[in-house]
Image (cartoon, rainbow, N blue to C red; front, side, top):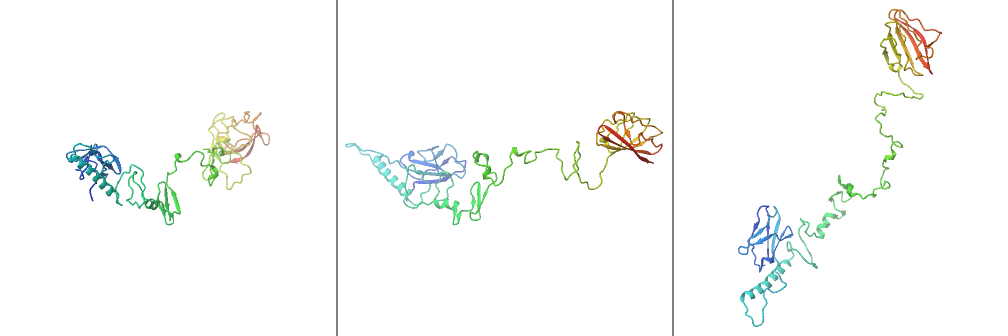
Length: 341
């Protein structure tokens, strides 16, 4: 069998290969492919038949050098009465010989890498190795082995989908579905197995986010008035106990605590500026050294505190005098509870 092609392997460094081991009539009859892709980026030294590439083929690249003799016309044409040169006869015979050799080689079952520049019909069986480049052909057997099995779709990684359990389990790879792969309007609420949450649901069927929302599993501090309707309280309510800073017109403010203490440093006229209707305070007064309290400031009411019994209580000269104060409407009422040492 005549040699009409040879294969080299690139190493990413060498640019020269050869010499070409087969004969050819012209350098234009020599073709080269790199991993099955035709290239013309080379020259052939006519004396040494060494091939020089413009740049080194990559490491591991298959370099196929083959002859495809031009058969469009005879190399030499003879005219009646002209001299016939032996070289012309040899060229014409070599042209026929080379074309015949190439046909014989490329008609074999295993023809290697061949570039077909026209449409061909194969009436027999074509077989080959597994394709390794985009330009390689793949046989039906190879494709079926990737896609189908005896029970259906073959198991394996199909790109964005992995198939397992004889084609019965299909798993979409993570991040396989991107925005670019979804056509606007294709994903509708009717196609989902659940009702998606929409922005219009917030504050209607879903509570909107509020950083001040109270939680059931942690202690809460309310900074605004809370209305509890018929609450059931288990256990004892913990009341704040507050010691008032003495002053000529000290404030009795329920906001500081429901139990408050004051030790007088002189006679005093207290105020109830922040006393709101419905609030009450238990006030324990230590009069110091027989000091007195005047309860007539109008913050308690138009005429001051209204006392049970008609008059303000006398303060004990030692220990505490306990007084209960509560407000109804715009009037604060008071009653002496008793004295404690």
